[in-house]
Length: 531
Image: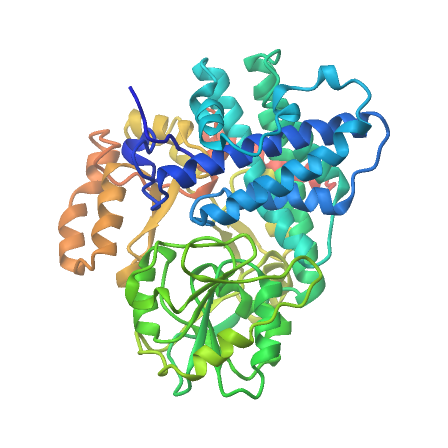
């Protein structure tokens, strides 16, 4: 079948198979083609840098940052600007051109490392896209690795913006990206590389955590205003805290307020941002509600990274991008790592706009980061005169030992015992838990104050769809009526409520209650050095 494009890197891809005419995200075939070509030339450059490292050569931070930026630019909903993507392709070819002569055995490099053309890009893109790998298993593994590396690039990019680098992470990212060009690697080789990608993903998160907390302090439990003020405002979305910091500095004394949207909400939890009096609060909800909420905001919007939803004409002139983000027809604020960005045009634009329309009132509470939870646990224990029981997320001896160290007297475990031999739930219910991964649970019922966590299935998808469309509590209750019985008694795990916690992904075997308790206690006692 002839396709205009092929992309299946996001969970919303058409038919859960792939976007072939236009992206569900709004990406057009010509943009998709240039993204494919950008990934290809970045793979080629990575093959060159990997060969140079093997020779003992040092790769500059600028080259590492370019590779990271290239991958980040191609993630879903980040950049729709074909010209910006083409500029990155040109820059990548130029850098590669300068490095290639240093490689001693150029004949061993893959074709992507040697390709260098100023034209014919559309034809080349059609030859090197996702479907260019014929073997479906190899193709899937190569793409899985690539998408993992794109996630790693996102972590690295934000850490780099705060002048934090990890040479080991950069070297792995480039080595793994180059390996996706190697036809000699088997499926087993690529599975091993996929697992290694996950390991370095954790390293990338640690780098970003160090960068963020080093610059802005450890997140604190914080009440965030969700109402609006009477001054004009700028709405900031995305993930780049350095961009937000620069904007807040430049808006001091201007009479312009600053609000966060969606992904930028966690900025309110960092101590360093609390000193800005014009950092008013959070406006709106999730990224996919942009079209309604950006229109109602009235002022300019700054997209520091993904997720951009193709804007309506009614507010397109108010949408600005920076960093890896881009959209054709929207103004882009330039500035690289370590450079001061000039947001004056954005601020002047805000002054000409009306204050934001109020969407809601009140506060939301967040900031439950790892350091904050650990810091507060002993205070909870000390503040009450009754035994404290830790519940949620405890599935083995490690969780039990952690709870004890924090001062708890006991733990409550639910999901682990659901698969016990003595539990009377339907066998299919147990099997569903045993097959679950760590990302298979989701929360329904938030919209009406009755949140419930369960495993994702046909019923939860319909529930969340109805929630997003504003269904009433009664309508949602009708949908789930008898749902627990369907799953627990009848074994209908597609249309029933399969209640389970996030630790479902840790459970991989059936045991008796005694075996579970003995195993948990034995592991905990070993960790706590009680034996």
